Length: 445
Length: 95
Image (cartoon, rainbow over all chains, first blue to last red; front, side, top):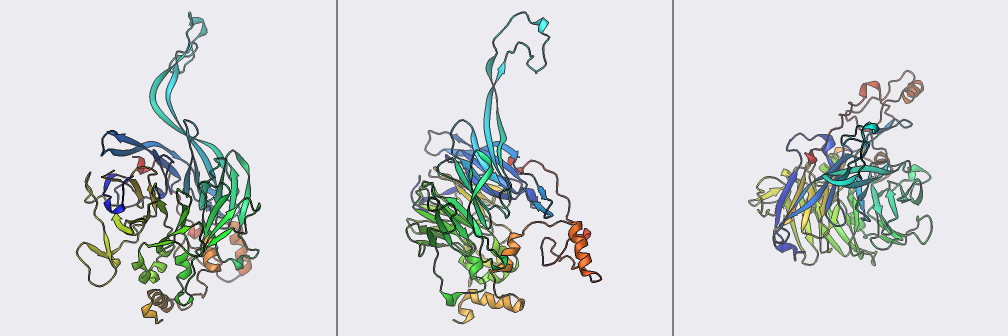
């Protein structure tokens, strides 16, 4: 992996999706996830569809090779449903995709909408049997009386066909809306979390799941916080964390008890009560939580910042990065247009030295933890020729705007980058705008 | 600290000026419950008739201009049925 963030030169490798200014709602990208090797990239959208891209590397032996992600498989994962009892529609929007570590030639992933999780198998077929005695090549049956000699059918190569089939459906376990799915390091179980409860499943068993966290109060009038995200520790199969709308992260140990309502650790940054405002709790709501690959740290994303926590220190984060602090003086309008409730995700690079998250105006931010360096980049097709290094962007918070800077009031709040992903090994990043996918590669590889 | 020195407090003052009836518990119950209920509520003849019976001669609370909001006692009426969902086609990312 390349060195310091400051040395990186990102070039737009590919841009995918419609160029239409008018966005079809179904095309809105709702989730993005690399598999464990980075060879496959899965996207989910509001229309319930999944598109999987596969990495193809040209000129592997050359120092400056180019990677391309091409469509590998696309299928309809979830369909719109109707809850007749509550007269509510169940959206087909894919909230999360998580890959299962690969055990054989086929690939497996979990995809979820608000209510139902599905296990999908994606397999390749590149040969087919030919030379049957009783069947013609097109499948029609031969009259047995015309068969004069016997032959042994053999497998012959065919054009690659990638098939996606639903293997398991995990339904009816969530009253509220599922926000997270996380596969355990034991490769046998996974958790699913909604606003108030977290359930533990076995990947092979669909007719039951164990409730491991329940924060629903007896009286809903007493509701003060909801679960916003949950994730299993990457190595410790007994440990998971869940974040809340009040800015706290609770770590639970499944060995302690069957119901993990009592946390083993609670991570919360103390707040100066004199600074408290109407917006404080809303902007402290954590929209994403991700363990580092090493398992020593976790990262949280709240409305204005990204925080890195050392799992051994609950009292405060070890690092805080401001994503777009200039928005603090715009909170009133951001509350009125609901942007203050936008759920941004965040991600680590392969060796945990850098983190990335999205912002508005199709900007996204990268932070180099080792060198205390950060950059703002833009996902745009303009001025992006192959091998052209994209220029950093700068937002002018107030006062005199320099040339090339953009003022806060000119930012387009409809252009949000909520989902980003970093290749687990290579210097390749993927950024999702509303309905387009941008793949950037570091020129220096 | 004076509101103008703290941008967040200044924004709060702005919001309270625009919406004087805004509740004092912003992250509290109402906001969270609205969040838990997200989703298009459809016309339910059972709810509709029960609500009509309860209110008798009074007018049913009508839909807010923003039809996806579920506000208080709002019962969806036949008038605010949402548009039919478009048919399922292939993703443009794969195109």
